[in-house]
Length: 74
Image: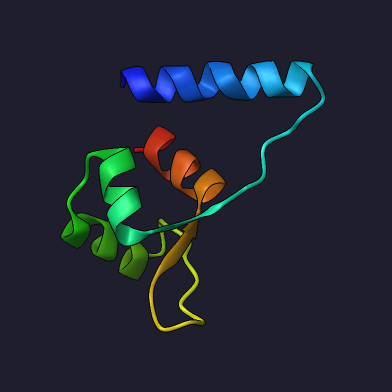
């Protein structure tokens, strides 16, 4: 929780300084750590279509903005 608050404050500071952060990709391990959800729950959300992902390179990759929306919408 504390990490997300610090990330949001950092994003606000960058926006104020006209340095908008790049929307990076995350792997399933990073999503699990960021969201505090299990990998199986993340995979179920992918199958249900509630979490967008790309698997063009043989593994699930997630845009950080999509993960943030998924976490906020429960």
